[in-house]
Image (cartoon, rainbow, N blue to C red; front, top):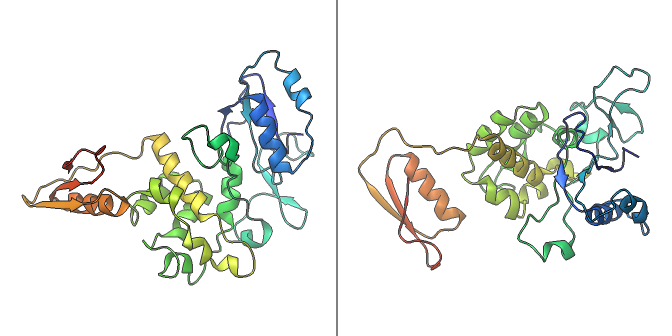
Amino acid sequence: PKEQFICEISQLHTSGAGRWTTMSASIAARRFASRQGAAVLAANNLGAAVSTPATPLCRSFSSSNHEIWRDPENPNDNTPQVLRRDGTYGEIDKTRGFVDYSRNPDAYRHPLERVFDWGELNDDGHDPIERTVQAARCMDCGTPFCQTHTGCPVNNLIPEWNDLVYKGQWREAIDRLHKTNNFPEFTGRVCPAPCEGACVAGLIDSPVTIKNMENAIIDRAWEEGWVVPRVPTFRTGMSVAVVGSGPAGLAVADQLNQMGHKVSWASRDPDIIRPFHFS
């Protein structure tokens, strides 16, 4: 059923929502089985559609428990509707999002797949509709502990860019994320996410998928070409050296460079050029 998993051999791109990926039928079958908790999957039926070890274009709906494409009573209505916890369907609404929708984080790739490559830890991620559902779970708290000293160490403006993702304003979301975070490419992947541990929704339910949201924002920014060099308009003539090429050292170099200083940083790693001029 399309609410669970869709694997299309043809290159028909239906609504445009979601991400198309290329994967083998066997990997697609394993991922589907792991997500559904099924012990047995009719992989033969899936493989029968592929006479050779081809790589069909598959579209995996992580939001299988949420999305329906249109109102069955109104075939002209193409507005996505989602399943709420109470069993009813309706358009995505943030007013009671933390009550209506369940936490659905990005699934991890199977370890037996990950050990053979240097690819991402997570799978291909959610489609845009499920990403909107997860953003709708952000409560717009009066006191968002996720961005305070009890949560995010860099004080990311988490409720603000969650709301922008919910509204589909991705360009504004990356601008807001870059206000406090020099390299969300790093933190969106390797950070242990203390923000989720401080999430108010997590007091009585599951926290918002903040880390996945951050990663989705920066990945979208790279795809759209929004991450570009920020060359200072003037130079102070002063030089600063930064020792260490980790996220902290790179963030310091980025900040000093934006202030107009000439920055060089060095690392003990022989694979990294030293000194490297940050401009």
